[in-house]
Image 1 (tube, rainbow, N blue to C red):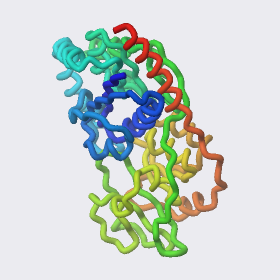
Image 2: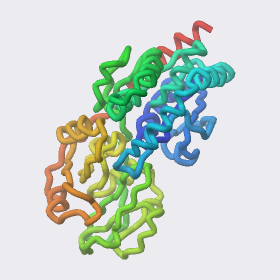
Image 3: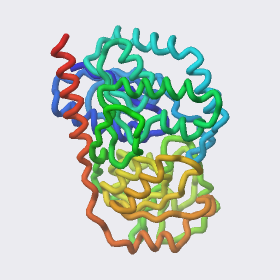
Length: 355
């Protein structure tokens, strides 16, 4: 079975969803041949995807242009959507030719609608999987604009062409899509490790996703009982910090090893924190429709607390004490990857059997 997987590079959450599904499929289909198209660097893909694959490092979607990890750049996003759809038919034809030349049995998209439109034009079955889709978010941000309706219609047509859209839990309603199949949580359990930090300290991970957003940790008050774990690219040299990279751990393992994570509402970090029993401290995004279902789900399935205002001034002591004293909850069970793999295997097998 040859699978062409298109994984959005809009942050790293799409990879966090796709990797468990691809790994589960590979366990079921030992003959799986995998080709991946994604702007995410190959090294990042290999950290999560445990089988061999061919990587085309290019993007077929952009999602939304961001001012930072929390805020959408509406002006830049609107301009790019109008540019993309000004020659939409040509883009679809070009993608269809690419897919035809590759000749996969199945296309898997998270969550590029161009890949789905190209697959439909090439006569190749396709499956999408995500907690959101770009059409619903586009309608949220630009639905009232006079120029938006034709673009939205093309987006919806592409999504509706899929053999199935796997709406993972938690996820947006997606009422306007076709053949939506609800499945369970998709997340990677981690392996707790000793981080080698001083006795009596708590490790707090700062993880705001794959879109650059630096917090001014240098200005935060020092707490003798807290060690901050943060990205190396922040180049923070406080004595009470360590870089994420210095531990050499996969993200789920690091998440399972810390005492709390500071983040924004995002599918990957929220669900992986719940699955690994890690308390979450979060700041809401300025205007992101997906976040409400994520926050509601995490409040019922994990330990979390919202920080009001900006994280720039640090994490209030009361918040840190709250997560330290919270009673642990039974970890959420990630059943969605296995469910998705079964669906992909069924659709892919039927397609290959017809060739």
